Figure 1 (cartoon, one colour):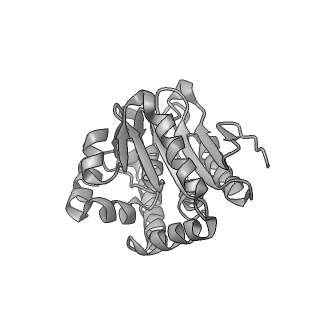
Figure 2 (cartoon, helix red, strand yellow):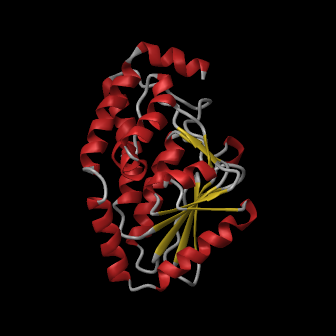
Length: 253
């Protein structure tokens, strides 16, 4: 069994073949800086390459899953090269979660905002705490979503509701997300990790060949072309970063 060390993510393993990857910037509500983005991609890549790991449990340490971009540490790209390099790093994290071989159980606690909401949607079995909330502020900031949600979200909620969620940035409680099909299950806050681990254990006990094939085929076939969505999102997000209006809106957010 391999152990891995990261600056902003913890990765722990138990005897049932479950690897728990936890965002670990609790003082910043696990908000995304560049180190966190890179650590998430590496942690999932390492877990998927680890023969002992059968299932991944993804959560956040402290009071939130992920509160979106860390405005305190945000470094706005100065040119297209910098913007593209940042967006590709964000998209790589989604590729590692969605296209990785191992099923991912999400334990979504507290806020899941922007990129954090995207990561929650990237999970195969997203379990939300009753008090958790999610929303997308990107369009209001003159930016664009990433994480393949332009493909995944309409497949989950339908095109009209996806438009509402992405254009208008409405804030949704966990029960709302359950009704929409974004949350797979909602549990009381204190039961979140117990329930997530129980689901992970069920997945770990299943034959791994069929489990991994099911994840691969469902993610490739159940929504529109995820790779095309990632590429189109990248271009739109790069353009948003380069628009001067975005800088002003980010300052006021």
